[in-house]
Amino acid sequence: MSFAIYPSLNEKTVLITGGAAGIGAELVREFSAQGANVGFLDLNEQASSALKASSELKANTKGRVDYEICDLRDIDAMQGAITALRERLGQFHVLVNNAAHDDRHDWKEVTPAYWDERMATNMRHMFFAIQAVAPDMISAGGGSIVNIGSNSWWEAGGGFPAYATAKSSVHGLSRTMARDLGDHRIRVNTVVPGWIMTQRQKEKWVTPDSIEKHRERQCLPDLIDPMYVARMVLFLASDDAAMCTANNFMVDAGSI
Image 1 (spheres, rainbow, N blue to C red):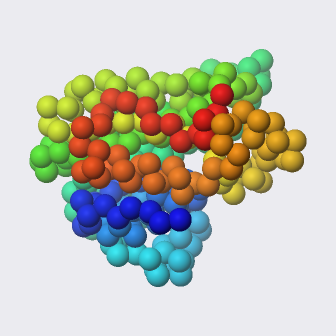
Image 2: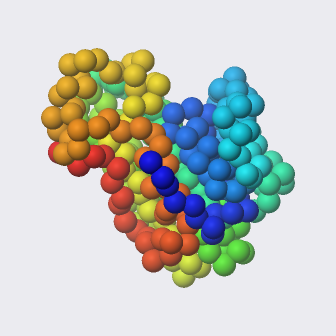
């Protein structure tokens, strides 16, 4: 397959949360290949270091790649990490709020503490990352924020009520921030992945039976690689999407 090059992304500075693995790592690779300077946040030092040092990234990178280790549940630490990356890479033009964990949990066993932790893991940091980088975009005269949602709640998927609730709220965040930031030409959208075949998913949830049932739910027969989520995010971050805001963009192979 041949994919688009977006000249407007060249030399832009991009912040990605949860960038060390899965969809996040693919976002790092794809943005850097476009010539963007990419800073990412993650809790996993080993995975972050391995990604930055990987021969694949080095072979295709046209921009700079750097990272900070932090726990996104600690908002002060996250905003400090963003400041550190800004000092090294420059002001941010694009934010991709990607970090999340779809850990399964039984609704009967959820405690208030666990519920709050799931919100902190899957949702709260998105708003505070926006708060930290929006002034950069205002100063630049515009920017793009992409929040990663999930089609799990659209499908009425069970087994993770706290995760589904957090992810459903991403759409409200995107739409209200699109209104609040629109006068500054800052666009805010939600990308909604279906079941993406990351290594984590393969290790934890994929079985021959689950894959077969999932194929039956999709309109397209192919399983979804993280690359396809990243390609949608690239489009929304680029000037090609200049009139796209406050909307959902599905990457789910027509899952029903």
